[in-house]
Structures are given as structure tokens and as C-alpha cells.
Image (cartoon, each protein chain N blue to C red):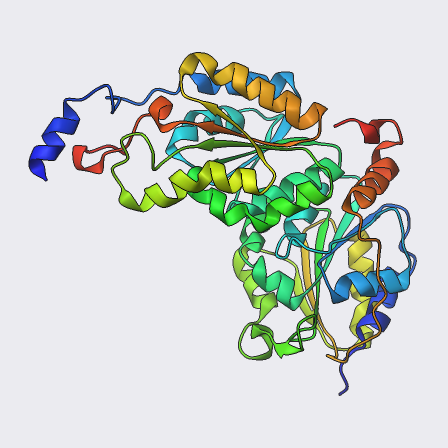
Length: 197
Length: 192
């Protein structure tokens, strides 16, 4: 069985994304993957803050309960913020979904193996932290049920998508954090309110 | 050792007999007045009463963190969603935050932390001293404006100034609540 291509998988998950889905990505490959699908006001690709993507997603989810918030990150970034899964499960926001594109590599630094290549099962970690809805996906046929849940599940969700470690051409999203911040706030809060704090 | 304990126990100018946190209600009321509605923390004894006030209020969401830098990313997400927040921690947690502080800085986001100090005024535990002493330096090197309150009379005005600076001028601001204010712990005397 061949491993999923990460960008094909993401394109499947973002099909008919709608206007009520915010996506925060971890730095590196997930940010490039999202950029390869487009560049939307509700996208927030991180270029740093490693380990913080899931917690950023929690903050947005708590502040904007009417939106679905997707944290799209990689195994390396998730491993650095592993204990945030405990924090998030304790809060249990029903509109937050964490999707880990797990290629079992540190892709930015020379494709070194991560712990998921050797011993760590992120899905089991999330379940152990208290996530009620967890799954590991290895086949394309499992993507559509996940896509449906991203939209309609009324509970916290954690999914690992096992993907190929092949290196893909980088598609760079905007790097200006202040711009990304204002763009997302303007889309959520309106142009005037986005200038307030 | 025993002789030292006796001397400390009779020195109320250094160690309060029963630490009181009269400022806690004032800070809680400032949160309410300035719409700070999300409070995250790694608990500290010095924040005990403030945490209790926040947890009793259904209009305030409280988030218990496993490590302090989570609270910085949480605050950034909350700001993206249009909600004001504050992070409560002890000085020993500041070192955990350094890289994550690049997030509000690069994104020009407000950030407010209230930090109870250890490792300074009459500290009993030597393990608290290094981080306590480097706390203001580390914060300033990370682009955070540091205020400090040493006396109860200045706590609320200092916190209110920090709230204004953080949210009106979109700055990263920390208020250090000094150990002199909070009272030093001494386990050999039975403090909890």
C-alpha cells in the first residue's frame, strides 16, 4: 500500500471548504501545503512559534464558536506541543479539529526521522489526553469521512494522516505576521473592529 | 539550620505570617472593566485568589496550561478571534516562554502577563533564584515591556496601566508582582 501524497490529501479535505472554516498551520510543510491550495483570509500559516499551532487553534476556537477551526500541522510541530493536547482536551471546544500530516520526518532540516517513525503513536497520545474522537488515516477512502467530520462533528477531533515523506516544491505563504493577523481579524470582525484590540 | 529557621520565623518584615492577596479582587475587577475574558495560567500560590475569582465567574473562560508558552499561543489565537486575554504565571515559567514570545511580537498582537515573583525577596528555595533573577532581563530581551509592583497600593494602578498599554497600544507587557508583596515561602516553617 503506497502512502498518501500530503497535498492530494489536503486538497480532498478542503474540498467545499465553505466560508466558516479557519485554518491555522504549523510551520514548514503544512504551511506550504495550504499555500499550494490557495491563499485565503481565513488562513493563518505560521512561520515560527513551533509547538504553538494547536494552542493558537484553541484560542481562536474559544473566541469564535461559530467557526470551525482546523489546526493543520506536522508530526514534528505536534511533538513539540504534545502537552497542549492535555490542555485542549480539558477545554473540549466542540469546533476545534487537529489534523496532523505525519510524514515521520523533520522535513525542514534534512528529513531526519521523528519519534513517530520509531515509537510514538500521536493518535494514542491524543486519546490518552482525553480526546473522544481520534483516528489514524492511511488510505484515500478514509479522507471523505474525515472531511465530513471537519464540517459537521460537534466535538473536538484529532486525526493523524500518514503521508509520504517525499519532498515537494515549496509554495510560500505570506511571511508578514502583522498582515496575516489583520487579514484574519478583518475577515472575522470587520474592517473597523479589526483595528481595535 | 534550625537556628536559621527560628530567626526567619521571627522576622515578619521578610515573611508574612499569612500571605494575604488583597490585590486579587482589584485585578479581577480590572479584568471585568476592560473586557479581559480569557485567563490562562500555570498556577502559582501567589495567584491563588485571583484564579479563584476568575473561575467563579461564568463570563470568564479559564484555561489551565501544562506549560507557560501554551498561554502565549492561546492569547494570540484569542486575539485573532477578537477576545482579550491575560496569562498568569510564576517567574520560573518565564524561561519557558522565550521563543513563543516571537509570535505576538511578529504579529503585532497585544499580550498581557501577570507574573508572581520567586527567587528574590527572602527566597528559601535556591532553585528559584536563577530564573527569578533573570526574569526581567529575559522578558525585556524578548520585547516585553516590564512593569513591577512592590507594594499593595500600586498593584491595581500598575495592572491597569499594563492593560491599557497592551490593548490600546498593542504592546507585549508583563507586570511583576514582587515577592516582597506576596511574601516569601518557607517550607521549614510549614508554609504551603
